[in-house]
Image (cartoon, rainbow over the protein chains, first blue to last red):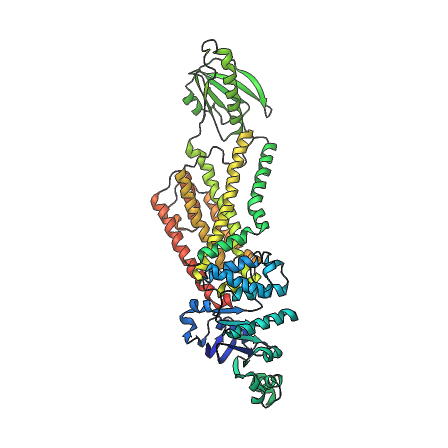
Length: 250
Length: 375
């Protein structure tokens, strides 16, 4: 379970306040979608959750343990995947799986077992001895996901998991995310594709201008805003909370 | 240092899987060696003497020209003066050889190993001594089928190593800095460019292990590549020697005993580690490999300059010079090869390097954790 309390991030370099106040809670066996327009602070929040960035203020807890207290152990339990993440192109998926498995201190038999399961699911097995750099975008993304999940993490953080992928690969990844939920994993997805939220998420959090403005069940989102659809609810939340919009309204 | 070995192995494999790198840093030096040997063969040796002389002591020969080389006569000349004294006189040039016949069954040939002409005359004298054996002495010693011929390089050992001591820092630092600029530039900046940087950051491997793994890989491959360059030079000298052509490499006759070699290797490793760490530090702040390689140019230039300055050093340097980074390694290399190294100076260099390396490592670790690098 992840608990975020009043998370804040100001970049020293350009003094940009990327995240101002984000609080939310994600339970095990749940898919939580983090929604927000471009530049709202979703990616920065995700990076803080995955320990890539240190928050300026606020707390992140993994099963009540503060992230900064035991970062190394927590990293063994989480997986973070974004479109920016790539793997070394000179290596084959087989070599990469062995390498990352050992970095996560996995036993050789566990590496072998998990590798087989993930490679079979994502259709990588027959290409497992080909260099990663020779793969198509979809194949690269599938390999990246397989490698990220190799160490059987409890918490999975996906930043735009299906961006730029064909419909078949999207469907494959979505089905795997649902499978992970069934296994009781804690999953956070950052996206701006509202259809994906409707199909996958149990609960949703909306961030506007670095602040969390909504956190609740997907099916309650529209009714809580007095509108018909998630899309309308999202737009309403954005208009009500976006500073520039507020000025225009006045 | 959990994970350092894994990161090191992965980085090494990554470098070795790149065929262009293997070509540039391993095959190219070998090609350069062949090319230089060919040039040496094509280029005649230059010298300032009017003729070359093959002096004989203990046997009477007529002073005649027996052959020509580089359009100059090769004379055989008898001398009465003691060979040791004669070789110190102005009459004996670097190009000449002296054949000591005082004991006909144990002939000694004195020559200059580093001089191509002297080398050539030595081989001729050797053949001459062996061929004339049957004619002159066979009647007296019929059971002996060969004559013992001893060849001696007459340069003092410290003189033999002096030139190479002057050149070695430059010869080592130039490829080392160039290699490190290339390999270190590809570490973090390369990871950022390829998008593999975050994947490494997300693993539970402590930053120190990750950084050290990369530094060790860069150090090893750069040191190996530089060693190939120097080995090619040594080999080139030996080939030139065997072919009796001008030695373009400057290693002819160089004698480096094992303890000197080990000391040089030790300081080369220290130097390599420091350069690699600096390279990785610079690479941290660069967005891609080419940017990192450009950013390393000032370091490469400074180091090359320090190495060049050391070439013009004469005599013994004051202790404070042994605290100047890079320059101190250059002068300690010279001291080692000239067999005049002092323990205190060696310690000064080692301590200054360790202090500097630790400082650079701390800065690297702090930078690695900073949001400027991760953001």
